[in-house]
Image (cartoon, rainbow, N blue to C red; front, side):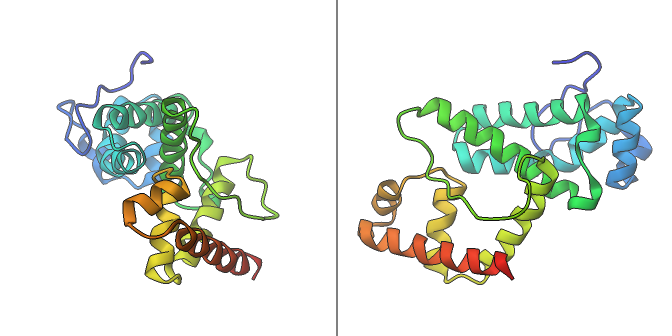
Length: 197
């Protein structure tokens, strides 16, 4: 852990260092203060978003220790490079969710190297190499998923957030494998159509 990074005690728990007025700052002001090296701003930032980041990691990994590791890594990244977030590309919360999810998926793949997560690819003219642009795309995907039938949305969420294969989804839901494949295929067609609009 880099020198000067506040020592979070757990997701959503208030640290004892006392962020003071930093707790009332908006996100961009907090990031500006973090760029200046203010530990109280980083502490307030952690207090504000740790529960959300931990929840995203926990949903992917289903392991509290690994989820805490991902949470720590995510906030260390902010502390080391607060300029990585570009406000014009989306919300800070959305960006943090993407960072945490990507780190959790990487950890899941290392845990299960012979059973890669069944993540889907989406056609887009957006350059996904940039983290902030991925946030923008993710928000569009989330909007498209809100319109899906519940059973299709659930199947896609299990593949996307939990890293489950089609076979694992069928086993968990008790549905035939062919039904799961069809649901995911129909959902992806609908999402792709929405992204082309």
